[in-house]
Every structure is written in C-alpha cells, then in structure tokens.
Length: 440
Ligand SMILES: [Zn+2]
Image 1 (tube, helix red, strand yellow):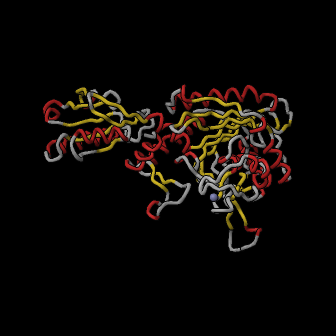
Image 2 (cartoon, protein in one colour):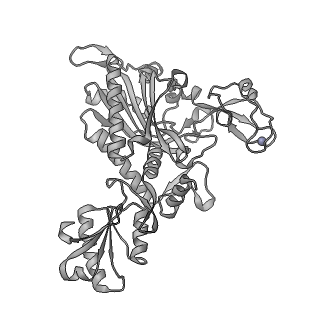
Image 3 (cartoon, protein in one colour):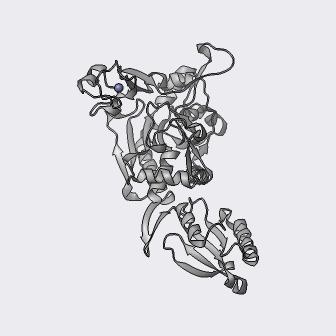
C-alpha cells in the first residue's frame, strides 16, 4: 500500500489536514488544517522563528501585506517569467503542464519540441495538441471599485518581495550592521495548472523566507554559513533523518532567473525525492530592480569604511507545508509490538501537538476522575500542551495518542489514590513505569 495515502488518511482521520472546502466537495489545490494540524504547523513556524530570528543578533522580522503594488511584480520579473508551459488537448480540452507529461523537456519547451515527443493525452489517449502558451501562475485580483487594468493586483507568489521592498525602511530606521537578515513568514499563492501530491504542490501555501544581506565580496562564506544553519535546523530542531536529506546543486540552465547559485535541499518523501527547500544566491538582482523602478537608492553605507554599495543576498526559502509533510512522513511508523499492529507518529517532543495525555483508568469512578482532573490541571499549568482522554478503554486511548504522536500517556488508577503515583507509558517503547506525580 502507498504510504502517502496512509498519511493522507491519518491526517483526515485524526484532524491534522482536511481537503479545502470539504463540505462543498473540495477546492483543488487547497487544504485546511484541523485542530491537531494547526498546532503542529504553529510549532514548526514558532521553532523556525525562534531559531532564525529570536536567538540571533543579526536577524529581524517583517510582516508585509499580501497585496502589493503591481510594480513589485514588474520589477521582480514575475509578470514576464513566472509562467509554466500550458498545452491543451484539442480532443478532450484537458490542459496540462507540457514539461510534466513529456519526458526530457524543460519549462522553456517550444511547441515543436513538445510535438516531437509524440506524447499522448493522459486523459483521452489521443495525440492532437494545440500550441504551447505561457501561463502566468500569479492570481490576479481587482482592488477597489474601479474595474479597469489599473485596478489589477496580484496575490503575492512569494513572500521575498515583501522583504526586499522593506529593505530601505529597515536600513533607514534601525541601520543594522552587515551582514543582517530579514525574515518573514506568510501566505503565498501559485495558480498551479495541476496541483497534486497532497500538500506538496498546492495553490496556497505558507512560506518562511530570509533575505540575508551581505557585502558582495563575502557572498560565498555567507552562503556556506546559511547552508550549515539549514542542515542544523532541519536535522536537530525539526528532527528529520539526515540520510533522507540530499543536496542538489542546481545547474545554471535550471536556476531561477535571479540566481547565480542555488542548492535545492531534497527530501525522500513517500512518493520519491522532492524539493524541501531552496538556498539561493540572488546577487543584487532584486534591490537593483527596485532601485530602477522606484527611483530610490538601495545603497548601504558601511559604518566603518564609509564605502557605499548595494548589498547582495543569500536566500533560504522553505514552504511550511513541504516541511510539515517531511516531518509527518519522517515520523509515520507502522509496526508490530508483542503481536499488536499499530500506527505511531514518532514526532520530536518539541513538535508533538500534545506533550502528555492524562486519563483516569475508569471514567465511571468519580474518585479516579477527580484525581485525574487534579493531575491534568497541574500538568497543564506547567506544560500547557496537555490533553485529556477518558473515551473507550485504555488500549483505544493509547492507539489514538500513538497516532497523533503524544510522547507520554499518564493513567490515574486506584493505587494513585493511595500513594500519589501514576503509570507513565512511553509512546515509542510502549514501556510503562510508576512515577510519583510531583516528579513529572
Ligand atoms: Zn485528451
């Protein structure tokens, strides 16, 4: 059985992720996070913010508007180049991304090159194609009550431009020393022709991006610094297996138009190796474009040498959903313990939605319930992420807590009333030990 299907099924069954607008039959390329999913997602984003912004002296946060002046996308090149090759089957009218249905062609494929591959329509099996046209992936919308072209704006396709357009504001207000980074988390939108692979390729996603501004001559050492930080974060804070992360040095012909060097961090997802995040050297491409379109100087004056220059930029960029799926598939385990099959999410403790689950052995014994409530209140005051479960029998509760990744289950029984000890059951080993309440 396909493991991705099992993860999708677990996500829906336990309230991590639902199909977007599920009640109306869904909305392609959108997903909604349920109670457990939003907790995990927030923890991922908070850990990233703590690691890259709060714990460092050289990083600052930004939270820019999603709707931006359309000049942003003219200057950045997105209006011209943020496009996929779209091809339509003349027989059944289905539309596809040409480079995804034919082998050995790139995003810049021409109609002639595509026709020469003699690809058959994946829907009707015929071979009768229209010409390839460039399909811009930005979502356009109208701003205000005017209905002409001047009112057209776009939902941002990346959070990065909200950082670049604020570079000057930050330099003029807090005048940070180089190198310094500006970090942002937020929604980005891409009108994918064919969204697929669960949350890997969706039309609306959350990004976590840093633009790290450096003196031009120092880009290589800073690139290496950022590269090491990404590995440390992914492996030691997010708990991803080192052997599932692979670096891919993107060749010049495949790099985005703005990049002089890019490393894609690939991850072994259930359906194969896919991009998890990117690390790009964007040079001064964006700041120079903004200087040209806005007429404002983007120069930085070095406080010691008084030298002026436009900083260059190293950009680590990661999609929250991609990271979320990497964490889930890394944690998802089907195993047999003492003849019992179980599904368990072996999430790192810092990411598990709940740290503890507290329950009374029997829900119809008021004295056990009362004592369990007391323990629950105490632990929640101390650790916050604590859940309560008195449904079904103990075995069922353990199976549920295993599936949502709760590291420890605490059960209050009749001995607890006598000696203030409880049973603490470990998620990964299923071992149970007696512990005094005060020691938890
Ligand atoms: Zn067709």
